[in-house]
Length: 376
Image (cartoon, rainbow, N blue to C red; front, side, top):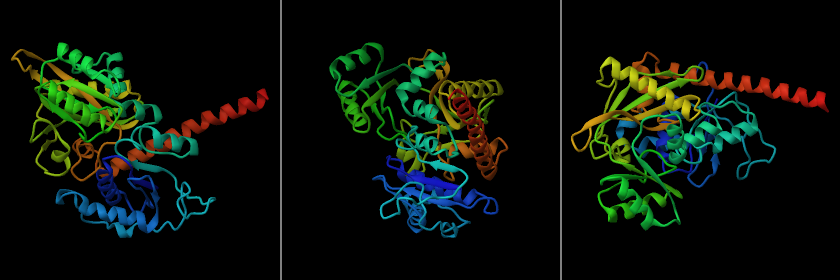
């Protein structure tokens, strides 16, 4: 199995830590792990260099992420073979493996780009395909998919860099009250997210978000609880028990998640049975609206009371993450643990789904080739 981690996004270090946790959880009697790292400038690393990148993840983030047990140095030495040509590698080099487990959070990994590479190479891989990955990664397209499916969500506006900012800010102010949140369209882990309390802060927040992506999303601020649900499988997908994030600050920031270790993660969430059933059903609807496959974490707000004291709108779907974190404190594996699927069993399920999808698609591709040959 090829374990692909790192990547060019701002979530590079989170990916490395996820890879360490996965390497520890995979059954060494069943899987031979071939680690492949992608650096922040896009270089692909193998063998000792890839293992060194994993080792470095131990010090990249606080002690809450550090693991005991299987040591990264125990991963097998794959030699000089490569999936794609690397600097200094022979042009005809090849690599033997059964499936790829990509743990590339954010752009250039969670957005359909690397999934397209795997499709072109005819390689089985874990997670959503090109379409689901791209739609769920782009918050503007994701919101449009939610709207098409009739899912409840916060009010939002999209802005493309280079357009009239004054007119856009006027449009936002006409529809929303401050504060509001501004996000890059294509990024995760709350990177580039700002809270704006007036027009000046909104303008600054747009500058920050557009420093990461050409498109930005502006959303109304929701007064409510943050609920997360894991989804596993394809046809039909299953939903985990819900969890709840209690941020230490105004919102669940990058520092809250990965640096300060200050947020509380409650699993299962303190919801009544009817609420839990409702949010699990909505999670599956959001998953299917984006045409996701295999795995995702779906995030919600539970608005019980509006900011002005009026009755809340209940569960509002926020976003879908197709490659959720797999660190030792990440919510996705934790929710499935609470649902009766342990970390190792979860990875087994995901790998099995990847192989089954590849087999289904290979059968259809074979029929297409046979039809072309007959027609020819």
